[in-house]
Length: 304
Image (cartoon, rainbow, N blue to C red):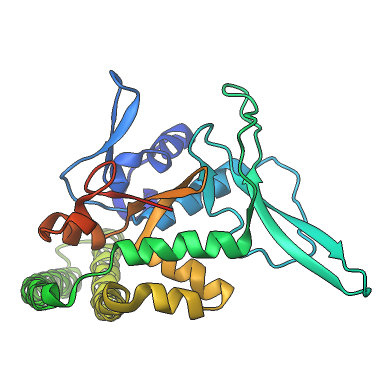
């Protein structure tokens, strides 16, 4: 902030910004003490925002070394009733023949001071949770009859993206060229004695800094462009056979697939609610289908 924009902000302001859910498309209503989707541009991906919250919450805490089973869904779900994390726990059983089996169970930690422990906490085996989460993808499966409309929507979005991207690339390249011209003119002024070496160095440093800012934005445009094509490919796969892909996926791949589908997973008994991740929320509002429009609102899906 200081280098790129000359803004000197206190640490408390950064903390406020990092915790502000407005940037992930949600606005807080004091009257109801709830968050609702707004219609402004979303600046920060859901997954990134909640990763940052985990980092912030982890500062000053003793680091924990996890042992035993490689739990697939550690840190991914929270309890809808009290907001606490759904934690995994290993259980070991020994059969009469001497064989030992290990199982992973998930349950609410129940550490909320405001809510307290609730006795109706469900203990779900990881295999059972696999089936519940796979249902999320079934809920978002687009019927074959709707696929032409989806493909048309993606084509239109791609056309707008290409136009916007070209305009932005042209703008930043033009600005870089203007700044380069200023540097060259200032150099000639220095050689003519119109300005001093010190004045030239100061102006050159300022314009070089502005050039680097435009170059970073160009690099970001290139990254976003590549991410768009990757996202579209995943979108079509998830929209048509997401549940199948999820069931066959490795643990780390399952987390990635869920991250593409949505964020803020809440466990309510044996039901899971999810805030859909873009572009699924947009598609949900566009497709006139009871499968896509059921639930708490157009951006959340219960499953179970």
